[in-house]
Image 1 (cartoon, rainbow over the protein chains, first blue to last red):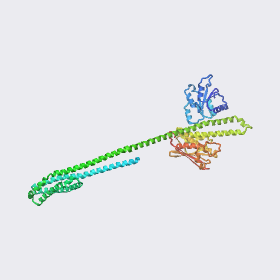
Image 2 (cartoon, each protein chain N blue to C red):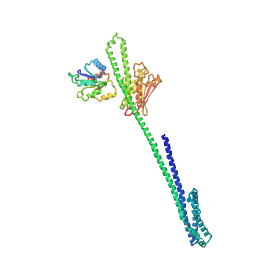
Image 3 (cartoon, helix red, strand yellow):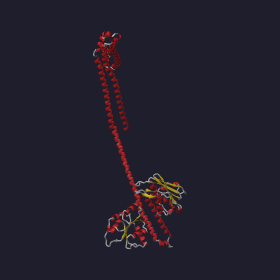
Image 4 (cartoon, one colour):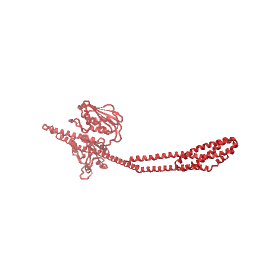
Length: 131
Length: 464
């Protein structure tokens, strides 16, 4: 049974893709907070900049796009690779890319899943059941 | 110019060699001739002594038999000396005629010629006397002539002088010839040296320059090839990036259309709804789909063979099944029939999948009776290549279009619900030809279409 206190960190530069996820959650009556980051750098800032009260509190999952300006998905994964605090955080890639190069690169990281857009209901369920 | 000079120089060297050879021949010839004359001259000296000796022996011989033996030897020696003298005097006369005073002197009245002939005459006289008289008479009567014969005045010295003269002349001649040969040898060396200086060296320089020029040209070509390859990669990357960037807004249009449809759901279902709104939403969706198909096509085409794909073991039958079962074609599994055994081999899985996907997709997309369409896949093995065949029972393609369909963005039907990018067959051809194969089409209107393509049985570890 999915937890109800879960937060989703959605790292996505495309507004419409964010809307698609939000609509699907609404359609499935899943009422979980989504914190949205425009790119990898903004996601890092949310995860690491200490503010009171903290913007993101565990438990949370990260849904990560690959093609983004400033810092793309893989660069973000590199940046948090050694972060002890994030080892147990589930990370899902949600990208338009079916490219073998991308899927093979993704396999090298500690991620829970690789989804190709648009995300479907089973995939979304998988995301919110991962914690 | 260089060739001309070279020919002249070569002829010169050849001439010098020939002349030298001729001189050597002449030397040998002269050696033979003069050697003979020198020998004869020496022999005359020896013969004169032998004649004197046997004349004396003849006089003192106690027995008739001994005397006869000496007479016989004497006769032989006299004959030989006479014959030799004939040869020598011929020589002398020749030399004298050439103006040589020494030889002319031999032929003078009191010269060597006269002396020898006198000597021979006395010898013959002695011999005749012996033959006509008995031994006792001879011992008395021939005494004076024998004594005269045994002591010829300066005779031996004069014969010696002839031999020495001949030898001296011979040496002079040989020396002259040898000097000439040395000179020629020197000239030959000089010519060779000049050739080296004025022909071989400039020639070598020219060759070196030519090679340098060729190498430069080669390097430039290699550089250009690199630039070209880079440009190709860049173009490919550009197409990749452009199509990727284009696909996001198109996808957004699709998603927004879906949202609109969702939001307007209630209104569109109501009786007062304007039907044109629903139709326009459909049109919007179709246009977005079309754009998406085009972009995917460009993306696929630009990515054929760009990156090295690792080889893996590919079960072609399973690959084909997977394409059908994938569902994106929207056909039943029994509509694609595998005839015979399809191979399992090490190859580029994605690329081969791309080719089969496009050919099978193509067969169904343009079929007049999609529901009942049948596509058959088979293979033959021809040396280094498999030759796969994908046949359909569709409308067939007129021969005049057979070349055109392989060009990018060519479709023969326009108003179909299922839009293709028109790039599928271009991708097939690019993928097959990059691996050294060929794609052929066999089709007639009303009799279906068969596409055949080659695929290498063994692939290099790195893709082309």
